[in-house]
Length: 57
Image (cartoon, rainbow, N blue to C red; front, side, top):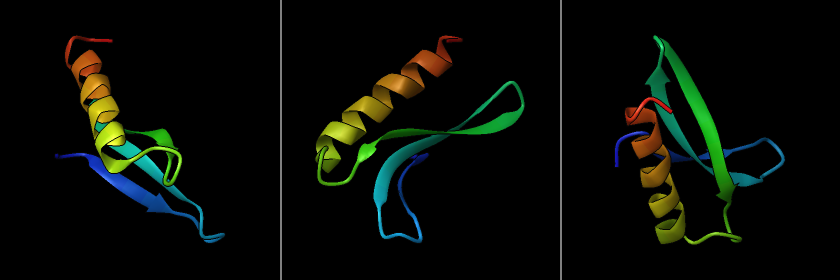
């Protein structure tokens, strides 16, 4: 899925995120921490967030 990924912090913490463009700016939004959410759950949440953005939310 385009815009879906994992961010790895220097501390080693890993977080699922979704990146999108809104109002001409690139935005990144954290979804949840790796281990707390599975990849499938995070993907489903990312799809929901991208749908809201597409509707103008």
